[in-house]
Image 1 (cartoon, rainbow, N blue to C red):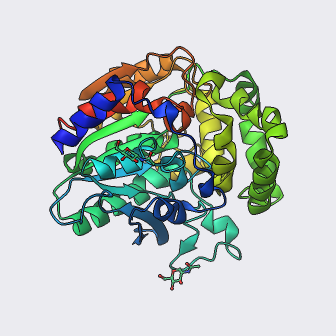
Image 2: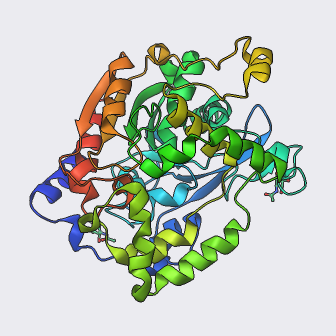
Amino acid sequence: MATRVVILILGVICGISSSVIPFDDSDVGLNTVEIIENHGYVCENHYITTEDGYILTYQRIPHGKNDDGSGKKPAILLMHGLASSSADYVNMGPNRSISYILADIGYDVWIGNSRGNAWSRNHTTLDVVTDNEQFYDFSWHQIGYYDLPAAVDYILSVNGGDGLQYVGHSQGCTSFLVFASTRPEYNDKIKLASLMGPASIMEYHPNEILQVISNYIYDIEKLLKKYKIFELPLIEKLREIALSVCTNPENWDLCGVLFDFVGHDEAQFDTSLLPVLFTNLPSNFGFKQVLHYGQQIKNGGFSQYDFGREKNMEIYGAEKPPAYDLTKITAPVAVYYGKNDGLVNYMDVKTVISMLSNVANDYLIPHEAFNHIDFITATDVVDLLYVEMIQVMQKY
Ligand SMILES: *[C@@H]1O[C@H](CO)[C@@H](O)[C@H](O)[C@H]1NC(C)=O
Ligand SMILES: *[C@@H]1O[C@H](CO)[C@@H](O)[C@H](O)[C@H]1NC(C)=O
C-alpha cells in the first residue's frame, strides 16, 4: 500500500497532473453503482438498518482495480453533504475522485447515503410516501446519532477490523461531530476522521442571504408544517430539469448560479462536469435538516434541535437544546477547509478545532479561492488536497 501512495504522490509532483484527465461523459445519467462499474471497479450495495428502523443503502468498493480482493484491507467510510449522495465521491472518475484512489491504494471503501436521500428512503415500518411526515422527522442529529453507529458496526462486522477511518464533507462532518460527541464509546473505533469543510458552528456564516432567512427560521418551520411539506416536492423532476438544462453548454452560465452559494472558484471548476454532477444532485433530504442549520446560523453555537420552550422541556429537561460537547470527541480528527467557502467560514472552523482534543491536522487549503464544493469537484483536488489528506491517513 505504501509504495502505491508514493507512486501517487510522485505522479502528482512530477506533473502527471490530474487536470489533464478529461471528464468522462459516459457517466452522465448513471447512478453511483453504475458509475463505479462503468470504470471497471467492483461495487456492492449493502443495506444497513438503524436502531430506529431506517434502511440505508451504502455502496462498497471492496478493492482496487488491479487487485483480486484477497488480503485484509483497512476500512474507510465516506459521508456526503446535505441534499447529496454517494455520487459525490465518484463523480470525477478514477485518479481524481477519492473513492477510486483509496480503493487503488488498498482501502476497503464504503460510501454512505444518509437517511432520506435517494438511496435511503426505506424503513422497517414507515412508508416514505404515505408516512412522509414521520419518515422525514429527523435532522442531521439523527444521522449522527443513529445512522453512523449502525454503519460503523455493520462495516466492521463485514471488514473484520477493530476500527475504521472516516471522511466527511460538509453535513458528513456535522453528523460525525454529533456521532462522536453523543456516542463517545464509538471514538475507539475511529482510527482517524478527516473532515472537509466541517459545517457546525455558524457564528460567522458567510452567506448574507442565508443569514437573513435564518432570522425567520421558526416561522418557516411553522409554515412548512402547516402546508405539510416535509421534503422538497418534485425533487426527481427538479433533478431531471437540472440535468437537461445543464447538459447544454449554452446554459452553463445559468448553472453556475451554484457558485453564489458555495463560493466562486471558476478556475477550479470544469463546467463539463455539470451534467455528471446534476445526474444525481440534488438528492432527497428532509427540511428539518435545513431548519436545524438555520437554527445554528440564527443562534450561534452547535446545539441539538430547538423544538421551542415547551417541547424542549419535555425532551431535554431544559428550555434550550443542549450544546454538543465536542470535548467528548477523543478520536483523532484532521480538518481541511477553504478560505473562500461560501457556506462554512474558516473562522468558525478555527473555533471547532480549538475545541477538539486530538487534532491530527489543521489544514487551510493553499488556494485562496477554494470553495465549498471544491473538496469533491476541483479540477486539481488531488494536488491541492488529497495528497495531503492521504499522507496523514497513512499514519493512522
Ligand atoms: C489512472 O492512473 C493509472 C496509473 O497512472 C493509469 O494506468 C490509468 O489509465 C488512469 N486511469 C484513468 C481513467 O485515467
Ligand atoms: C425495503 O426494505 C424491505 C426490508 O428489507 C425490503 O423487503 C424492501 O424490498 C425494501 N424496499 C425498497 C423499495 O427498497
